[in-house]
Amino acid sequence: MNLLRKILFPLAIIYGLITAIRNYLFDIGVFKSASFSIPVIAVGNLSVGGTGKTPQIEYLIRLLQDDYKVATLSRGYKRESQGYILADDNATAKTIGDEPFQYFQKFNKIQVAVDASRKNGIEQLLSQKQKPEIILLDDAYQHRKVKAGFYILLTAYGDLYADDFMLPTGNLREYKGGAKRANVIVVTKCPAALSTAEQETIRIKLKLSRGQQLFFTTIAYDDTVHSINNSLAVSEILKKDKLLLAGIAKPESFFAYLQAANDLTMVYPDHHHFTDNDIIAIKNKSKNNIIVTTEKDFVRLKGSALDGQLYYLPIKSNFLTAADLFDKTILNYVGTSTRNG
Image 1 (tube, helix red, strand yellow):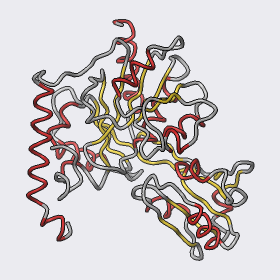
Image 2 (tube, rainbow, N blue to C red):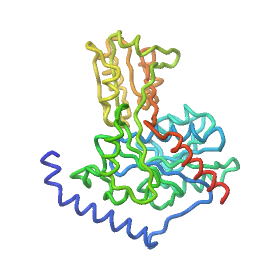
Image 3 (cartoon, rainbow, N blue to C red):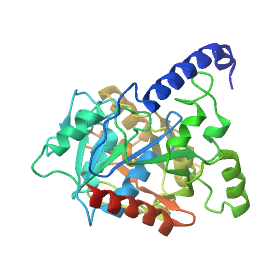
Image 4 (cartoon, rainbow, N blue to C red):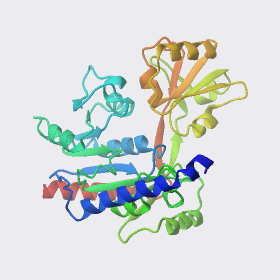
């Protein structure tokens, strides 16, 4: 914890108190939460950034899209638009945000919508003729004006919410007690060889409430990188001089997976909108070598002067154990909720 964050400790107490009062007023019904008759699954975290929400949402899409009409609803962080938008052929990363645009490009069976007001977004989705049967709320754990039917709380291995503190001293958006709202807690970005003993240590540290389930996932990198028109094996590009480019939170593991001795790296802020000057700087630094970036950055850079050099590395969220139990838990909720609806 740096000195400035320590100095701002009184502000963290005040911020924590404000969020605690807000949550209490929602809990006792003074502030109203809207509920809906279809299954609504909210995925989020207590801390800011970097817990792996995108691969978790994509895991849920793959699990559900073949049997249900699925829609995702996001805020559309840093998009250059306002209000409710349902993605169509005119959508871009600038109009709906990079993560929603990634979903839209990868999954042609689903609907992708954005709205800062999740309540209005759900109402708009359900007013369509082709309405969804399931809605996945992306980064909506603190959006309490909607009461989701099922909450998935993510916390990153090595940066557990149990070890954190309120903003601005720490990275928490609300006090740790907010974890009690979750049906499922997923510890993300774990080492693939995480032992059962360490899993149990984390379980004890998180102090789960009765009925909560805990799962552990790791980020699985693909063995192939892709461009608009081509694919290359990772084993092949490891031998090539290249530029590695990331505009995501906590890109260290991305670099570690791909970087060789002579490679150059460039880091931009999470959700960065690349300007013409950025493109020129990237082009110059690359020296016409291959550029490998994250999938989220690729959707923002595609169509630029970098297209001939640009590749992206897909990732997935893999469960270390009990994937079948997680799937069954989600499918049981969806099936029960659908029948009740």
